[in-house]
Image (cartoon, rainbow, N blue to C red; front, side, top):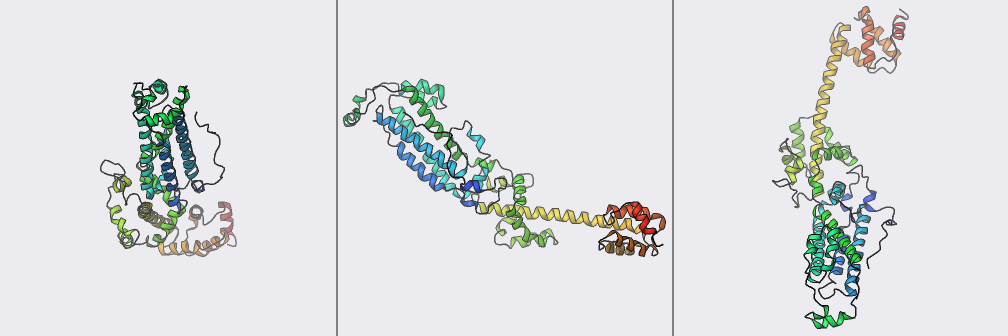
Length: 409
């Protein structure tokens, strides 16, 4: 009784679809949307349901009941291997499936468009469990209830199994009684049967937990880290790059251009009018209570990419403006400091522009010499060296500076 599965064995294929993805970069592959063949899993789950429906109230306690239990368990193990092969994640009898939700986010994000298939898988798994529990409750399995109580989270349900012992030959349908009589087991190993039923129920519940709570993987994520990951990815950089040519214009001008873009346009106004004190995902894709809404708009990875592109472009625009302002202020400060060594700011700017074109320290020295008679005060040559050294325009030490300045003078 029971399927003996080699828990050490893994699929012999060294590469499966999910494993091709660089897990350190959520946006590493723009063709991710077809990561998992959910219809393959759905087809097998339907086969598993058919295997479960082989059981009915007339089968127990025949050897056929045990055979059908074996078939159901074997199908669930195949489901486990298929899921692992397609996703790189094994669920099995994991003691805490909720801990897997964080690891499933990448998988979920790129399969938002397949929500219907995932919902169907969840519903079929639920039907399988209900049918199994219904068969157990309708037959005299009370003798294994005590064993299940100690081993399974399903103890409450199984303990309610009908404790009235009915003789198998007294079934109303005597034809079934006759047909199955030859397959009755005189002795049933209750402990093995308990272990097998507990294993089946745990497998069913773990996969139900995964598919029922798949949307939690979206609810758990915050927009900030997601945006950072997008900006660091090659995909994100490629989508942001065309907009950088407009960073010299005003923010309103940039937004106006994005509004005319056929891809970004429909989302620009919605994003720019969001409240800053609340997460973007919550405002765009969740209901008033904060639960993720499964609809055509939210379950579309292209929409998420559009929102991330708009947010990234505007974020980089702000950083560019800050950096430009800082650079401008630094340039003004540098010119102000240089003007102390020249007769006016125009002369200082001319000297700075020329110095930046120089490629060697010797060229800088010659430039300084040319400008000494134009206004550099000899007593301030050391402080000028400090300034040029600070700006990395002159790289040698002060003694070299002095020696070169005084040479041929």
